[in-house]
Length: 352
Ligand SMILES: Nc1ncnc2c1ncn2[C@@H]1O[C@H](COP(=O)(O)OP(=O)(O)OP(=O)(O)O)[C@@H](O)[C@H]1O
Ligand SMILES: [Mg+2]
Image 1 (cartoon, rainbow, N blue to C red):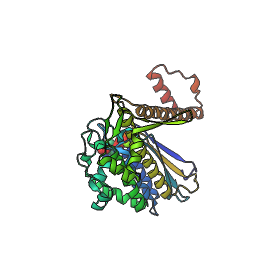
Image 2: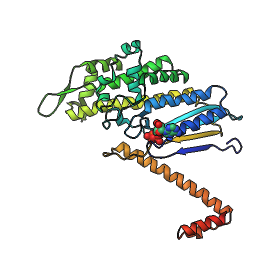
Image 3: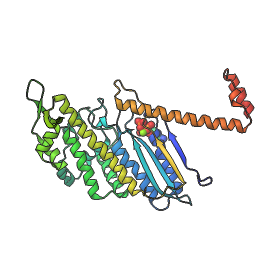
Image 4: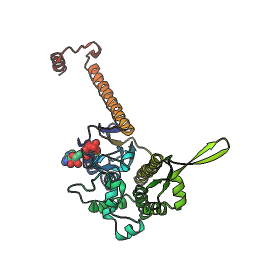
């Protein structure tokens, strides 16, 4: 990169649990050790702690499975020192916030918050233990063997400080997480034989409204009715039970996804993405592992499709490089016919 002035990139591919994230972290640590000097390298490394808390979860294949794709661009100065970084993420698995297979967990941060928050935080966030929340207890898995969520929470707080996320912003982050948890405890009762519902007046409803900063009736309207425009008239219709549950879960997923994007934005701001792009950067792409569940939703389709496309891009790129090498060696690759392995071997030997 320094010699030729050309940006470099590393694609880390493989199925879930293969070790992509660990490899990406080792590569980042190596680059940080080579290009560290001004403290920026520790900020860059601490972003892993934050993004893993919000974007990783225990699955049946991996206790720390990334549920999003990540590209980190590390920028270097003329002398090869890290001078900034930029993170881009893609395809966060939103459905995990509200539903997942038995034995799997939602995102680590929920369990970390519930077990590690200080008494003051717990009071402000109206927080209870993880097993109190429907969204967390439904998959019957609250702990990971050998992992202390409370300890991880204090590491997360340290990382948020290092990356310069202000105390106020940290509190905003935690209150929105608490909103998501309380939304899951909101329930509905069917009030007529057409399956229309009203929202039960419970603690979930009161706490979610309080933390969202809206009134209880406003939240009730948002969760149990929809507005239809017919001509010049607005008609308000009550939702059926399935629709209301979908509306509640969609709100929880949307809050979480926005929160994730917001934290990435905050991190990028702190890592100095405003500065001009140099021609000296190394990017590391930690993809989201291929998976095939018993039941695959649209999100899984998008993830596997994105991975297939990336793999194709990688293959094409490699073949192009290979062809260039053949041309340099004066071999007419277009007329080469591979009949069997012996032919390949003899061609390989000739090229040596
Ligand atoms: N180099 C390594 N040293 C020690 N343990 C490792 C290493 N690579 C992988 N592991 C072990 O394998 C587990 C899975 O690795 P990792 O989280 O990197 O997988 P992944 O390919 O990113 O999977 P996913 O697609 O689900 O995110 C780690 O939690 C760790 O226990
Ligand atoms: Mg991973």
